[in-house]
Image (cartoon, rainbow, N blue to C red; front, side):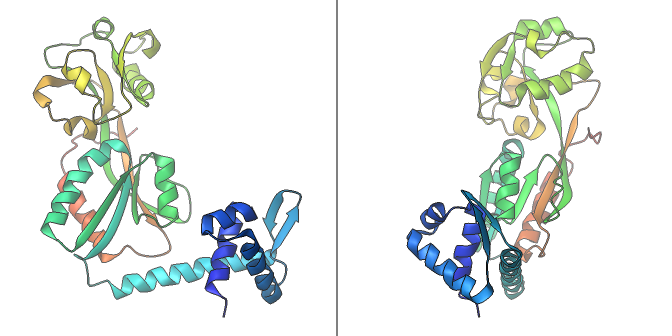
Length: 298
């Protein structure tokens, strides 16, 4: 039987590719890392190939790492089987981008109020981080705006989210000149989103760079505050807009062409969702059903 502590050290070392950083991650000494590796190699042969500062797994090392993953997957499947009946008890973690997260988090709190045994964790993160934390088993569920091609992940359509042109409630926009007069409230994805939507709604326009910038925020929950105060317009996803508290102070411009993104629900491919996670997904799907009317993905 393999010592689980040695196996954990080897797994971290295969990721960090550095004895010092591995020791720091595990909270042990570098000497302890070296000793555990020597003991493993006595049992299984040469596991690491070193050339200068570079480090790579030998075929035996690859086989041992695969064994560790199979053990981890088996433990997760066992845990899910043991708790299958507990659909309203236990922990469920979900990670998502900011816009859809603003809509999901209140819904998750409502579900937790209905079932006190549930512990629902939500984290805001960009797409690359969503993939990372789901793959590392830190969160069971994730939402991304692009479908991942990683074979370790299962992906299914969750919902659609159109981009919206949002202006102050007392303004109108009929032309590019109207946008010029309002000014653009920018955000980290603002220029890309505005280009995608405005290039279709105002063909032949001189481009987003021609618009005056009248504000910026990297907090999606606060982005519409300057719009509500009449300081400019912005382009952002639907769920961010409907989560804003001061709806009477803003207005969505009806556009002749829809620009719609698909949001993908992801989880690890190797094992089924827990009954708790399935309940959360079903609840969220039902709550979001009908909230977006357009079906023209881009």
